[in-house]
Length: 132
Image (cartoon, rainbow, N blue to C red; front, side, top):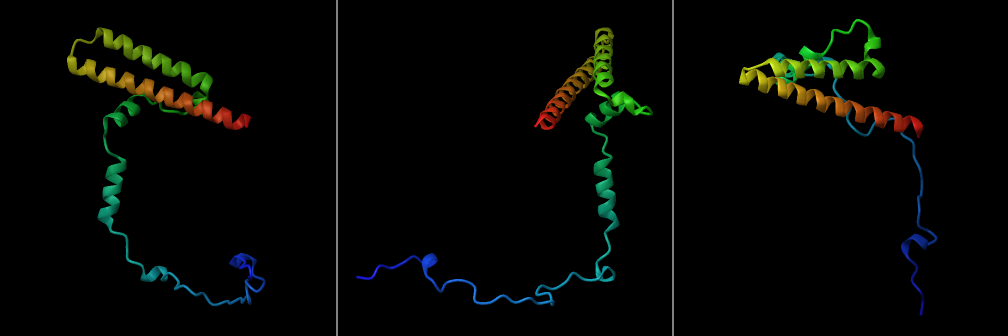
C-alpha cells in the first residue's frame, strides 16, 4: 500500500519560473487635469464643522491661555495653572446665584477635571513608553 504524502511534501511542487515585467498590470490614476474639482460646498461644510461653537470649544477657548511663552505648557507650570483656574471657577461658583451660570460653571469644572485626568494619563503613558 503506497502512503500518500501531503501536497506540501511532494517533490515537484513549487515555482516553475519567475518573470520581471516593467509594464504595470493595473491601470494608473488619471492625470491631475482629468480629476474632478473639489466641491466648494463640501469645503465650507468641513470648515463649519471644524469651527463649530460647541460648549466644549467655548469653555476651552475661555480657559486656554494665549500662549506666547511655550514654557507655560511644561508640566511643572501647566498643572499649577490648571489648579489655579479650577480654584477660580470654584470661587466664582460660590458667588454665583443664577442657576444657568451655576450649571455652566459646574460643566466647565467637570470638563477641566476630565481634560486634566486625560492629560495626566497621557503623561503616564508617555513616561511608560520612555522607560521601555
